[in-house]
Length: 363
Image (cartoon, rainbow, N blue to C red; front, side, top):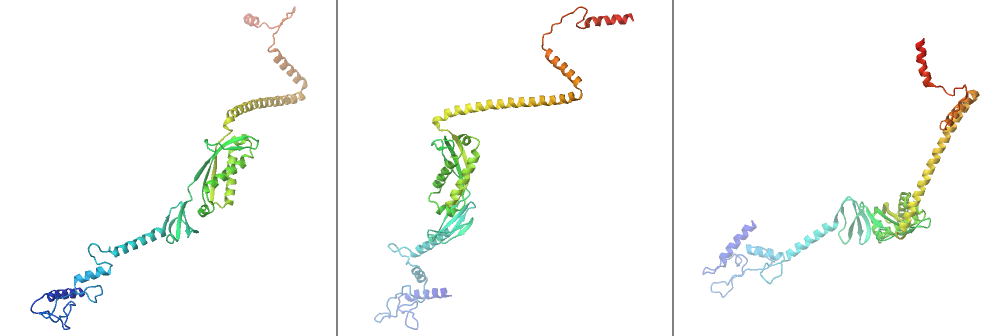
C-alpha cells in the first residue's frame, strides 16, 4: 500500500511541477505535493520553480527514483558514472565470503584411515585427531599436520656403491648390506621428539648391527646365523629408539649381502671352496666308519648266535664250523688231485650214469 501511495504522490507531483497560468495545486500547508518548496513572492504566477529535495535522510519516499536513489546511497554508493568510488557493498560481501571460506577450510579437517592429525595450538602440541572429520580453531590459532602411521618405510644401508666394513668376533672384516623397515607408532613423539627421525634411525641401525656382528664369527655372519643376527639387531634398535621416545616401530631387518671385502673376496672364495672340499672328505670318512661299525656289529651278533648253539652241542657245531671254513677257503684255491693205487679219488658220474640203464635192463 505504501508503494501505491508513493506512486500516486509522484504522479501528482508531475502535474504540480508543470508551469501554467492556473498556479500550483498545493496542499493545505502551502507546500507542493512531494515536499516542494512554498511559492516565492515576486513570481508573476505566484510561485517559483519547483525543487525536489534530495539526500538519504528523507522521512518519506515519494517517488520510485527517490526510492532507488536512497537504496543506492544506503549501500554505500550513488551508482554514479565514471570517476566515482567503487561500490563498497561488493567489497564487503567479498570480504565476508573470504572470512567464511577461511573459517571452513582452516577449522574442518578430513583425516584418512591410515593418518593421524597432530594439532598444535600456537605452536605447542595440543592433541591428536583420529580418522574422520576433525574440528579445530581456525588458523593460526590451531594448525593440523597429517601423519601417515601405516605406511612401511625402508632405509637401505651398506649398498654395493658404498662398503660398510665391520669387524667380526674372530677378528675378520665383513662387508655387509642390509635394510631397515619401520613405521610410525606415535605421531606426536615422531614429530616433536626427534629433529631428524630418518637420520637417527640410520645411525641406530648401524650401531646395533656393529654390536651384534662383533659377537659372531665370519662364517656365522655369512651363513648359518643370519636370521639370529637380524632378530637381535631389531631388538636392540627397538630398545634404543624407545629410550629416545621416538614413536617409531621397527618392523624388520633384512641382510641383503654379507661378504668379505672386495680386495680379498677372490682369495676368500678359494678358502671357502677348500673348506667345503675338506668337509666333503670328512663326511665320506664318517660314512665309511659308520658302515664298518654296522658291519662289525652284525658279525658280532652272528657270532653270539653261533656261540649259543656251540654251548648246546659242541661237537656238531665244531664240525659244521670246520666244514664251512674249509668250503670258504677252498672255494677259490687251485686244487691238485693225486691218484693212489686202488683208490678212486672221485666218483665217475658219467660212467655211473651209463651203467645204471644197463643194470636195469638185465633185471
